[in-house]
Image (cartoon, rainbow, N blue to C red; front, side):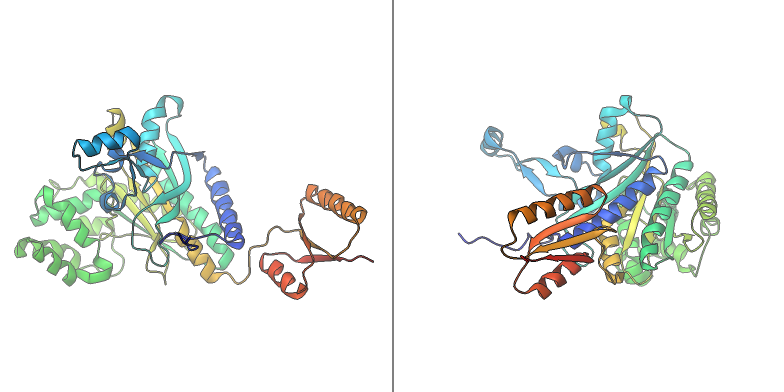
Length: 421
């Protein structure tokens, strides 16, 4: 059998320079979020299949990498003629595992609980630039706070962290988009859609940036919705030009569909966040922002950068998820950054490799250097490492020019050549 040297489709090998950049950015993320009081936790990469297929994850539930039952359990399932042979699955995000984690450990955790999670997730998606089947997510969540202070702090913390990272490549401007699922629901109900149709309608609205209002109209009518209902619905969005406030957009939505406190809450979040974030960062109400996850119950947000056709972060409030695990609802709100997408942007902009460290040295040892001389080199290298210098020792190659070029590509700046004098 011939072995395959390339990685599985949608996954990639990480070269040393890639890992240095990733570790550098991860450390910046951890340090920045820790300054806001977020505490790092870890959850298993595998979850019970029941948790992953609970209709909380939207389309991601169609993209689960399932783990088959094993041994006698698999045999019994086959003999019984069951259709489902999986009992576990690889997590497709960090939110569902967090909800289970909190329900299982809440007595040991403070209230509110500010969690930081960094880990790999898996989705059987169609790979493309900035999108992989295995990728790293970085999430912050605030659990047990039902006020909009949670949203404000999540936005401020994420904006602050991204500003620090992007300042390294000269990016200062990005946009934070905010909406509320209750506003989306109210607009659909007022137009005449039934409650059970809202999920399908929002899937179409979520394509606004790609297909526009006419594309949404065609799709909704093709899906069997009445043309007059579709017309009333899209009329709400047809007047959108430039920036629009939440209050202006919702002014024509009747109060029996939308509590005015929701509108006030969104406006308050935007006002407070503007006062806390970098002046170059734009924050705006976006009535077409949907977010695909089925577990969102209130405020939702997303971050974009001009010139890139993907978001770099997103999140929202999900007050009903934890209760599915422990029988009692717990207020919850989170923000997830697309780590791989951030790395993609940084690689596009970076002109120089991330150094292995500020102080580094490569020692190249020639042929026939005596043992006592090598021992001196090893002792000196040990002392330099204790002082914080990164030291690599290598045998000198015939093509030393190429060897040094490769070391420079790895970030080494200082070189010492040792010959048998």
